[in-house]
Length: 123
Image (cartoon, rainbow, N blue to C red; front, side, top):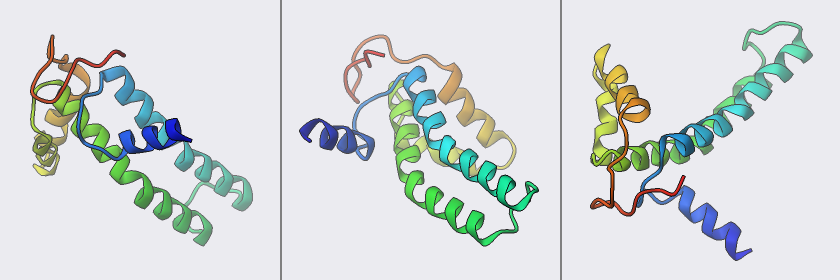
């Protein structure tokens, strides 16, 4: 139980750093429930539109619950590249902002050694 609580605490704590690999793993794991809900909706209603109440409520619930975890994941990834977590606001700049944020998250490497946000992530 202690390990589970430690893991949940790490998911909701913006302190520390994550590598690109761990960032992508968490991102994909948070995307799976939404993809499953879309598949269930398509199977039940016979098409892929999101007209059903079940789909809309379920997706809204998962987005509401998973957004803080994903935001903290983004902040930790920015910390790994020695940037402040406030850099995620660049995503709101039209056109170039999301591309710059994706560059920071996926392409730039992490700081070689420890930085002011913590030790280099193990994986």
